[in-house]
Image 1 (cartoon, rainbow, N blue to C red):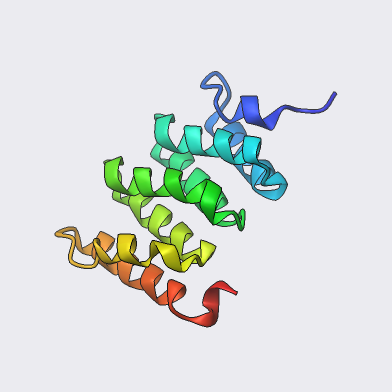
Image 2 (cartoon, one colour):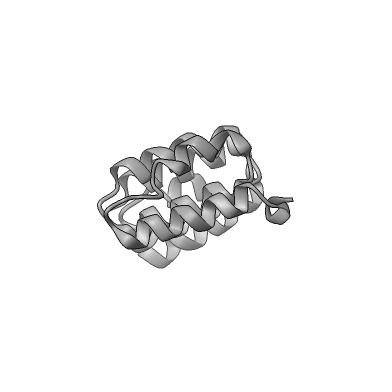
Amino acid sequence: MKKDYKKIILDLNETKDQRIQAAFKLENIADDASITAMGKALLSDPSPIVRHECAFSLGETASPKEAGPYLMKAIEQDESIFVVHEALMALGTLGDSSFISFVKKFLYDSRKDVAESAEIALQRLTTDYAE
């Protein structure tokens, strides 16, 4: 029986590890439904570790138009610097220059870790790294 990773990632009865593994499986599928499931988990999972891995996986999808809005919302709303850091890195990895102005807003964030993450993400967005 084939596992439905889109359900697993959102099912809080599953272990954190199972939800994280689902994110990794969905990152490889990277269709709209998979990205939506990861995005919903990024914005709703109670575990910062799971949200962090969802942000990472969204960055690996090579789908900036679909993944970007979820990552930007997490950057603006998540209380965990751990998650905000990874979401900024994911935007950089996606490599879409349309994220530059958004990322620049965080270069002078009062949280030093966030500002440094924005700096690295901006470097990724403005170099050949993202190719």
